[in-house]
Length: 248
Image (cartoon, rainbow, N blue to C red; front, side, top):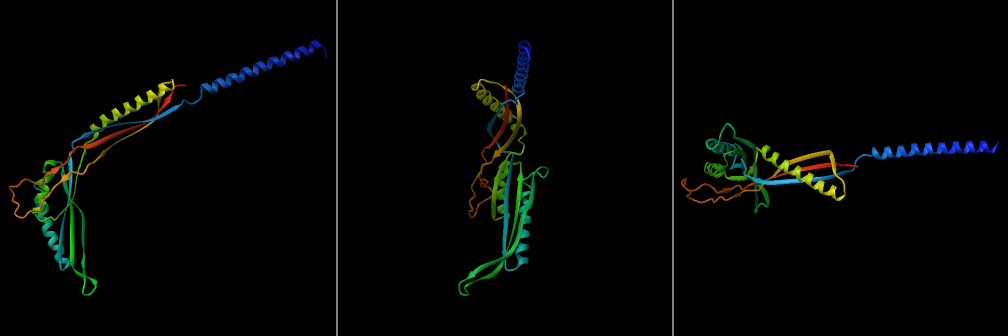
């Protein structure tokens, strides 16, 4: 093999090496260009307080008698009076009264002489829920039920049923808060937001227990003020969780 032939072979090898390196660099460049963008996850929140539009009052009638039928009949008669009177205070078109639970069971007491528990009668308990948009009638509903024979006020809760418009406003604020936070973080890394990869949202209330005062006083007349009930405002919170993409 001559020196000239050796030179040709070396030149061919060098040429092939250059071509290979070019292809490799091009591939690496393409991989870098096609790499998935970075992401940043942020959560934006917004809240405000709104007046409730609905009140739900849970009342109960508890009756005792020596016999089961006696306890049940006494309870039925009293609850009929309670419901009849309550229907006059609510709007039948949009409000409702419904039974939550009914219970009839033996009533036992401990006998010291016999040193054991003995049955002394029966207890019937009927629990109903009154749900109305007439919030200003909450105190009257409680007084009316008690004057008719109800002997338990189990609970009273205020809520916001129509939250659509409130949530729309708060979600818009929460989304803007999320974007502002993402822009701030992206700027710190000397990059910018390029899009949204995924997002989720929620809007919920944080109900507060109202203040209710009821005094069982002898001789309370109808002319006296109704039971004072203070509802207070309800906190509504919107949350937007977003994953933004960053420009490469």
